[in-house]
Image 1 (cartoon, helix red, strand yellow):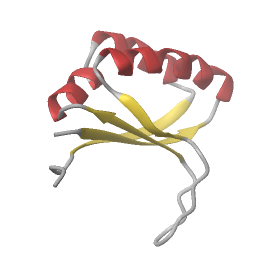
Image 2 (cartoon, one colour):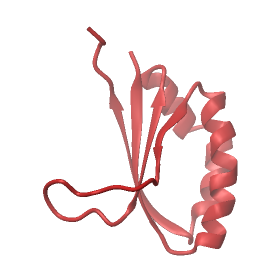
Image 3 (spheres, rainbow, N blue to C red):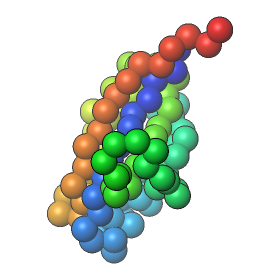
Image 4 (cartoon, rainbow, N blue to C red):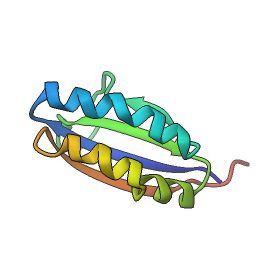
Length: 98
């Protein structure tokens, strides 16, 4: 069953954040993940306006999502994000496809 990581990111330094963005696709793929959404156009449909960058990743399992996020490779990439963005990430288990 797939699992997702959802991130809300307030980018404060796009130059430094771009370096982080260069590294993450290969690391995500290494753990079987893929981008579902990566900061594209968005619209708040209900509730407070979302002004942060929203990223959605899909992984084959909840365990793979956790392994990615806690991996040594991603830990290194996160150091490039430090000071360039404030982020909040969630992991959520998907539902079975009927």
